[in-house]
Image 1 (cartoon, each protein chain N blue to C red):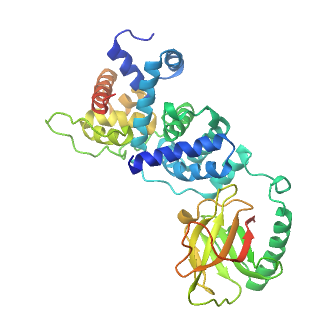
Image 2: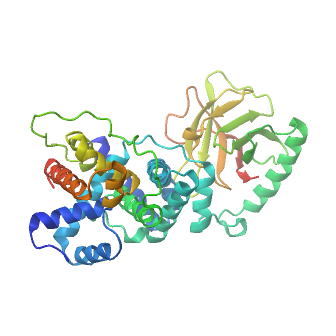
Image 3: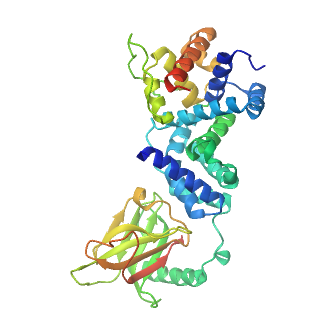
Length: 184
Length: 225
């Protein structure tokens, strides 16, 4: 098992201990996962206070529902991200109406004419980063806008000034490429 | 309506996890995922994968007040009269009294304003403070000596904390007797009321184990200001 996998397993252990009422484990889980969740929430909302509120609610909900986590279904990290994302999408979807030109991965060069490379990495989170690099910019950018900013198809089309049908086609092609690359 | 074609179904799951659908469409998809184990598994694989995109962002420094808010709302921050530690009230009273004395002696505390303080005292000598700990609003910790200390040259003084309900103490590093030590928030982690801090006398270079092995020189618990 590599370090990254051990890291995920440790997160699972901490969340399961939290389900048993171990406050110390829950605090350690918070220290491990909250910095990235806060970064994601801040990027999504564009507002520090809203981002902190979202992360606070995520961990309060995680503490209350920790007994519903099952490690055989996924990692604690993905579970926490799922809670945060639901909250962000329901409350702050598309809140950032400015500045979608600084998204991580948006400035990667196009992969060129060679066939898209499939990732052999067993860790899907790491593989995704490689697979995103394999997408052409016109497909990658709207996908990043959906992920980091919570934009809908319509909002993406509006912000990029591209017809809705074209955006749908690009996103779906991009998602299909990611699916193949990730071997899902 | 959930499509019949396998590739369309897979795309719908990818779009759903990315958050491209809203309202009743989301509810329809979630009802489907609740009934179709294979579809639910694919959705979970996408969720795992997208955590990787979050790692493209630089980590945010956690403001100390955020954990306090989480703890308070989740009911983790126990009132002192319910805390399991038998002498909590004694610690609190003694620390508060000593804090007043220390502030009077040392002058007003400078900005950034501390949000926690700990008066470390020799075990069993409640009126004999040896060090003062302050944790500022940005989470940085300052350990300030109040007494001169001299120890054998083959010994080191090591600083520890025991987070509430943690299985064991965590080292915060070695301390030079008589010198102030500042530890950044990233090393300190979150601090809570009642959190234990102590200085122990260890072999030169620090404890050979991941826990204290020598006698406690000074000890105290965090008090929120």
